[in-house]
Length: 231
Image (cartoon, rainbow, N blue to C red; front, top):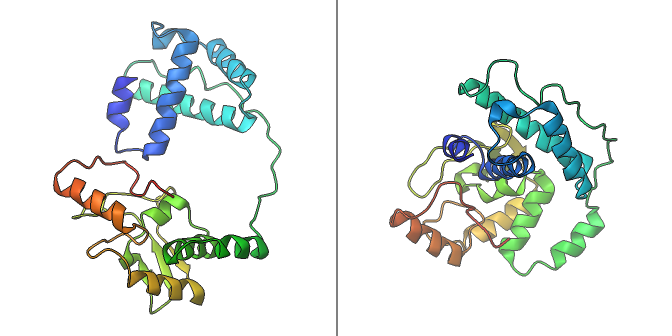
């Protein structure tokens, strides 16, 4: 458990690593912390899933946990803790889950939400999220250099550590170029004139920038922490 946390830090998004550690911890509690990896059986994992479903989690969440454990045991094989083809999750089928129609925010609902936005930062964020479909974490990692005002485009791309910029990669690890409508461009241009001086991040407000930049200068900022945690 501790070794997995150490080896995977930086190789997985913080939220994904937390899911890994939480799931492995739950399995360890189910089979007993003293149980050797090679003694964990298919039946143990099936019993674990049954208990988790008994707590009320959804079939989709149970499937996600099995996928996490399958990867964990595959890594244990790679690291030499288990022999090849001994993954106890390998033969466990996923629970069939009927697809649901995705829920969308209608234009009328969005307008009601937009009208409740307290300031230009929130209005810029809401319009950017709604019109581009990017994930919230992707929005929190947007840099001003990712916004092309001339061509009305937004770039979602990985980046390395550089000054006040933290290393980060989008979930799909691919660069995307997304059109920005006129309303989004206008709001972002207005917000750009109000942002903290020297802040490279689009949606970081003044108080957070003051705290964040101080932590970085002092070498106290830990990689993987949420850049913005008050949204």
